[in-house]
Length: 108
Image 1 (cartoon, rainbow, N blue to C red):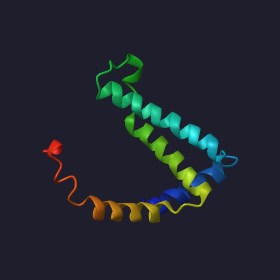
Image 2: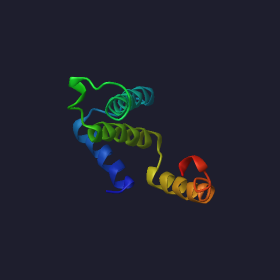
Image 3: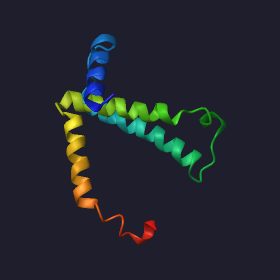
């Protein structure tokens, strides 16, 4: 599924299962909450924090999907074509950063 199709799927889900989009500020708070859940898993599973027993069953993929869902909601409700924006950003990064990381001695 490409990003355009994902935006459409989220919009259809909202229309078929939700009442409406939460407002932008609520979705921003929800996005922050979801990113926090991803950070918790990463910090405990891959970082130096101890993983609690209750954290061991958390699914990182599911939490990342929650982040993506809210990002797609925000794009939809603010009129952003995220596929077009992502394609532009990827091209910009390819042009701007083509050699930059290759020259970074810290990455060798």
